[in-house]
Structures are given as C-alpha cells and as structure tokens.
Amino acid sequence: MKHILFIVLLLACFVSCKKENNEFTLTSINEYSPLVVGKYITYSLDSLVYTNFGTQEAHRFYEVKYLITDSILDNLGRKAFRIVRYIRPTSAYPFLPDDTFMAINTGIALEFIENNYRYIKLVQPIEDDYSWKGNSFIDATSSNNLNYLENWDYTYQNVAKKPISPLDTLNFGNNTISVNHIDYSFALPINIGTTYATKDFSKEVYSKGIGMVYRKFIHFVYQGNSTTNIRTYDGYGITLKMIDHN
Image 1 (cartoon, rainbow, N blue to C red):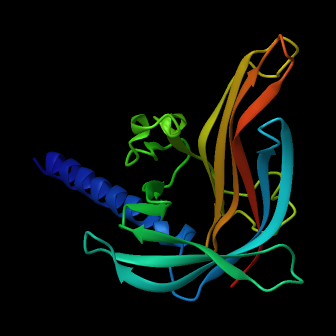
Image 2 (cartoon, rainbow, N blue to C red):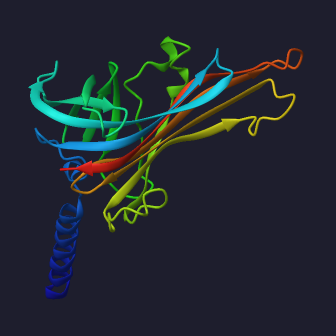
Image 3 (cartoon, helix red, strand yellow):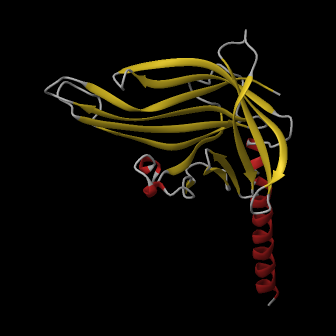
C-alpha cells in the first residue's frame, strides 16, 4: 500500500512540475511586439509598383517610421493602440504622416488593423511550426481584389534564433522569430509564350523587445499576349527593414 501511495505522489509531483515548466516557458506576445505609447520603429522601404499600364516594374525607396501615439478602446471595448506611419524620401527630409493603423494584444493574439482589414499577426504558443489562419477575419471571397488573401497559414519558424539574410548583418542575437504567411507561385519563371502567371509571398520577422524588424510582401498577376507580345503585371510589393528604434 505504501508502495502504491509513493507512486501516486510521484506522478502527481511530475504532472505538477511539468505544468509549472510549461507555464514558465510560455512566451508572451508582448515580448515580440511591445505596445507602449511613444515607441517607434523606423524602416527602409522598398516599394515595388508596376507603371506604364502595368508593363514596367519600378522600385521606389523611402524611410518610414511607425509611432505608437496613444491608447484607445476599440469597438469591442478592448485596449488598443493607435499607430501613425510617417514617411519621407530620405533622411534629408522631415517625416510627414501618411497612414494610421491599430494594434490590439488580446493576450493570446496580436491583431493588427490596416486599411480596415484585421490581421492576426502573432498568436500563442510561440513555437516552431505552430500555424494559424492569420487572415481569417478578412472576407477574401467578397472581392476579386482580395481573393489572393484567402486561406493563408501563418507559421512560426526559427523561434529564438539568429535571423538569416537579409537581417544577419544586424545584431539581434538569438532573439528573433519568423512568421511565414505564404509562398505560392504559378507558371514561374515567365518565359516567351507564358500567358498567365502569379506570385504571392509574405513573411515577417520579429525581434524580442523591439517588434517587427523585417517584412517582405509581393503579389502580382501576370498576363501575356502571344499575338501582340504585350506583357502586363497587376500587383505590388513592399520590403521593410528596420534601421532604427527606441
């Protein structure tokens, strides 16, 4: 009887210790996306656009600053933070405001509202290969302009590791996480005779104590005419790389 009681007590201790360890190692979302009024991150911005009726690819370069200006209550009564984006062509010019966003840390998820679309940027648990539907609040079927956002699986990669290129030159240590959103292409590379192709790629990197330090996004649809040899692209892309923060 004493032997059985000892085993029961040992199992209870093991379960209790395991629970405590799991709670201890659970990383909060706030560590990788601190929301504090006055916090800012400045990025270099490479903006990809298609000009001349979609026949030419062009890159436009800027600096942008994301500044948390104040906290408010959202329409669900939750604490939210207003983020104002400022932009300038180079550091020789002053920053001018050009857009506003909202971020909400629910405790289990980081919601980010951009252009009235709600994205789930981060969730718990923060561990490699954990996946979630980051665009689930967006009705991607309501418009042909949004259907490329449908059914994205956001997935953690390289949790608590050094970032790989192009961020390996910055000293983040073993403190970053990557979030892969989508990497899809059809009929690439484009060759002579290609009449339709498409590409969707999206990824973000977050650093502990800082926030998002890198973002790369590209979406385009290509259409070619074998008779007229006219090639047109419809889409855009951005690459953000952190250059400063407080």
